Structure formats: C-alpha cells, structure tokens
Image 1: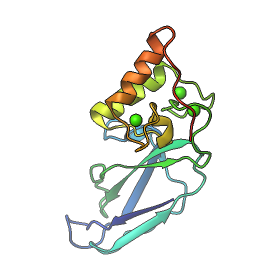
Image 2: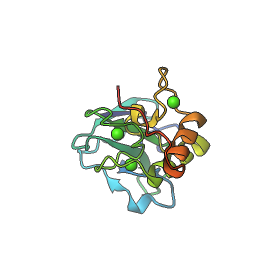
Image 3: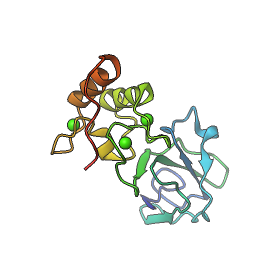
Image 4: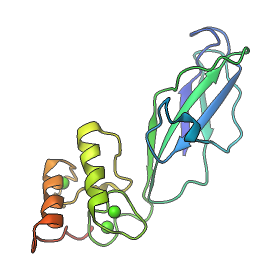
Amino acid sequence: MTLHWIAPGDDLMSGTAAQYDIRCARFPISEANWQECNPVAAEKPLPLPAGKPQEITITGLEDRSLYFFAIKTADEAGNWSPVSNIVSFAICEGGCVGIRGNFDADQMEQVDIADLVRIVEYLFDGSYPPACPEEGNINGDPNGTIDISDLSYLVNFLFEPGAPAPPACP
Ligand SMILES: [Ca+2]
Ligand SMILES: [Ca+2]
Ligand SMILES: [Ca+2]
C-alpha cells in the first residue's frame, strides 16, 4: 500500500522539516501509545518543502488485517510534532470465508464475543472497521451495510439458543 500526505513545514507551514517518523500498528494510534507502534521499515523519505505531496510504499503487510498509520515530523532541533491524523488500511485478499461474522478477522475464523466487542466499537466510536467488510455484514443484507441490525443479529446468535448462524459469505 502507499501512504500519501502533504509535507508540513519546519515552522508550522513554512520551510522544510528535518525528519519523519512513520509508524504502523494493529490498533488505533494515539499520542499515548506511540511508543508501542512499529516504525515502518521502508526507507523513510526526507521531508520536502511545506505543501508538497509525498508518499511512501509499505510492503510486508499481512492478509486479513487492519493496520493504522500515522506520522510525526521533527524540525532540525529535534522538536517532534504531535501525531498526525490516523489512517487505517484493511487487507482482505482472501475475502469473506465460510460464514459471515468474523469481524476481527482472527485466523481461526471464529465468530464469538471478540467480534461482538469489535462491532460495538466500530458502530459507536468508529475505531475498528472490519478487515473484511463482508465478514462485518453479519446479516448478509444485499447492500453490504454494517449497522445495528448486524449487531443484533450477532447478539442473537451468540446468546439465544437455537438462533440462526450468520449466513454464508457471498
Ligand atoms: Ca467468516
Ligand atoms: Ca472472530
Ligand atoms: Ca448488514
């Protein structure tokens, strides 16, 4: 995948910054967890003058995964900026597998409480979109929408004896 951004400046939006620190994580990145995020291994581009578009190509990402990326920028004196906006990137080359509902894309393809936690987080604070959207469309509606109906379908399946399993993937 390729990340694109606009170069910030050295001093707000003018001049040229000195270096970037580009990081990646499996969870939403914040100032608080920055140290736990992995520096992106690819060769880091040097900052261009403020306002110029820049990009970096990132390889080695795993299938059926959701990644978050963010950048910090430093000036010559080593003053680091706050964390940039966070972008997420989902990879689902294998597509939806078996029945729907593996919202967290665990390797065992289980549909369980962990998926319930993820869909609640997704619907109420938007933090974790599913790596595979069709796994998140638990009730299998033809529009592929992920909403409260999918949450209630999953709650029924997990807690109501005899409730139907999520439909098969398309
Ligand atoms: Ca599945
Ligand atoms: Ca799961
Ligand atoms: Ca749905």
